[in-house]
View (cartoon, rainbow over the protein chains, first blue to last red):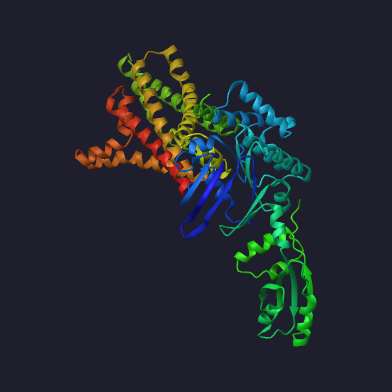
Length: 326
Length: 255
């Protein structure tokens, strides 16, 4: 349904997106995961024909976003980061306006409005001015707007921001129910959300896609290697190469300043004993040695922070999972 | 309902929910009403003077009241119409509904025309209310209706031009105050071109500059002269402004 091939977006000198490619099949839910400023919103704006890509091709439902924007727009329901609501209208008036803009009218419009008001629990506030509603209700009105014309493709920019935990669960349930009949792209920086509702996760950082897989396989990929954190008081010049020579060690990330090493080892092989022996025998001053079990959150941080030129020990340092409220 | 009609309906709704129309409308009606009253009283005192001097007086209300009134209304429109138009696009940008509009299956020209028509209808409503004044005068006096009607035609065309400049200014910025000032500035320049034109005299450049200003075109209509050239001026200026607004709105996508 959605096909993106090597799109690049530049704002003057700044490159917001760098040859991003991905695709979404019919009925699939794809999560766009990344820190703020990674290019999530830019990608969505290109897909919704709000702005054109500098290079590359984006196709939605078989229509090119640059050549046939009207056809694309008709098939997309879009919820931008800020819910696009008019404060001076009531919920009903607003949905009526949205429906008419999309060519709905008469009984179809009335029944669509009724459906969305029920689905999103807006019944009690439908006659109130949107300006007087809370953030959570506005977000739901924004979602109702995106769903109103029952589009085959939904693009949701952080759909659960500003909702309370109960509403978040409801909205996730809603998105899960949409899967199968609708193709959905949602952006988020909340990992459990991606794992909860999506079949596939694209991790984007600094305008580039750094990983793309199912949540399950992303976790499996982590488990392909055991990770060990090692802190030395006085590492020698050859520490790196000698650690690498230990059987089972695949990769070493270091940060020179603190003497912390992150060792990636073969799956199912515990090299801690051997590393400890080596460290003691070489007189490196072994301070700490521990195995790290990585969560999806760690991978996300590793993948995205790596881009900014930080070594993965930053991950170790912030082992406290960057507690996103769920 | 077509998208354009939907946008017009929504704009009207927004105008009447907010206090802007009520504030602008009462200032407009109050000042036009006050001016009309002053011109009528002035005409009355002139009539008394003439009576005393000549024994009889033939008062020309068209000259004494309506022409003056139509000339003064220009100033009022220059100040109040930018206040009406300033929110049209600037507010959409500020509240982030602009992205929603541009990702809806609606063409940019439909958005521009819908917004312009919305505010134009508000203006027509306000102008229609001033129609009470000639109707009242007609009860008590005699005057020629024809120049009054062409004067109103002039006001409608002038208002449409002012509003289209305001739409353009509003599309340029997300700050409503800036939008209002830009449109007042543009209109003042257009206005003062007339002075520059008469300074340059009867040269080709002078004629071109005078033609560019709305002053002489509006004056013709106020005097009861309906010339195709003037109508062409107003319609082409209106279309040019709306076209420029379209380009500006469309170009924001490319930034």
